[in-house]
Length: 127
Image 1 (cartoon, rainbow, N blue to C red):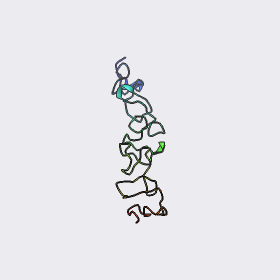
Image 2: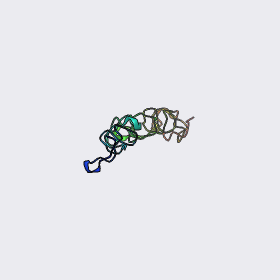
Image 3: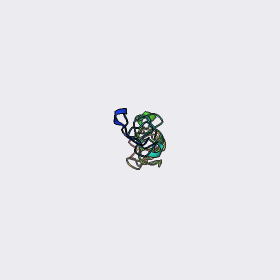
Image 4: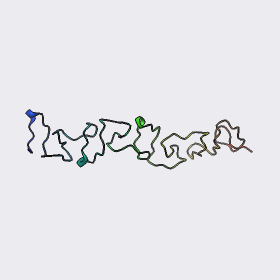
């Protein structure tokens, strides 16, 4: 009705959903388990879920929001390989076949140096 009735438990009443008030007359907040599209929420799982980030946006590797519930081990805000976090949000490591420009000089996909090309520390190219 447009009038916040505290006695009825209304924290706000904007005559419908608004950027500051949910349809149930509670103050809009990401993480309250109520999706408020007017406030820019596309999901709201009440916190981090396998499909929704803590900022009320869908999980997406490379969005800069780490979501371990969705299986992300890292999320550096991009999907560029070789910077420590790969395009699937998995931490790059010596022996994965990707030269991590942050800590590696070479990476032949073998972590024990058995290939004869790259040392086991991914720092030295073998003769």
